[in-house]
Image (cartoon, rainbow, N blue to C red; front, side):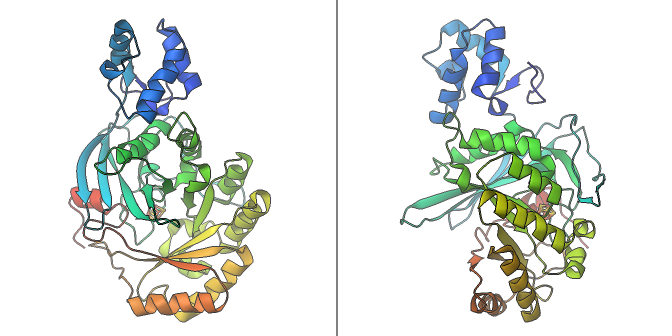
Length: 386
Ligand code: SF4
């Protein structure tokens, strides 16, 4: 049994393991296989990551597990707490040699390379916990997590993609972010997960899908798959693959522009994938799974927030039979994009609503901390001055 890059040195990264894979390890170390389930229960059900505190294990096994298992592979280097309860972590990971090949946009069957991958030096990612009120008046706790360090897509308005892709995160690193957020003061059980942090999740599909299985599993974090949203800028072939994996998650397409010309100006990968191709893939997803696709649309002041854009977006949303989430852009220092006026956002929403599209404005949260995706990492590296 290999450790699939989930280790720090020779140690096995617990967050990358399933009961089955971990039982192979513990058996190889001379322990009964059921130790695997016991360890995972301590980690996920009781939040304990120190084998010395796993009191139903023999002393000898606790000592051996301390040597052989790696619990936290990341190190929280900054923790910010906004006045509205949003908490954001900047996590530093030891960089590792990449073994898999990242998947870029596909057009006409041509698979394109993505930007360079580094294999030395620590890498950093961000994750955020966003509390909000749920339908029954309780608290929804949403973890917004990263799937990659950096991002190969390089959307012009986003701090995450400024330096390209550094590395894919492993399954364990993805799961670990949710666990870490759940352990923040006053958080506890995470109810929802969105892959809307750093990275394009469908270009790291294998790690993302196995992380989803752990997040959703009864032995894992027990978050219903329907409460997990994968947000993609649009890789049609990967959307189709996602269907075949039969994970009952929610799919969101980050459209951000209703036509190819504007989209290409904002999203470099739109050069290879047209809105039409995305619509086809989204319709395929809906037809095969019966689950509605959500369109995410970041409103950038003076760029994509005019009435004519709203009318074009109506056509796209109706063809896909999707609902639309509008997100008011949070400005990033050094980037030329502006936060739109509130009145423009409301007017945009009205056009969609009047046309019968189910549309919501996603509240901007945590504005008193570096709220835009990638901003905290960007600031910690000194930002850019231009
Ligand atoms: Fe990547 Fe998303 Fe940022 Fe675009 S918006 S560069 S896809 S992280």
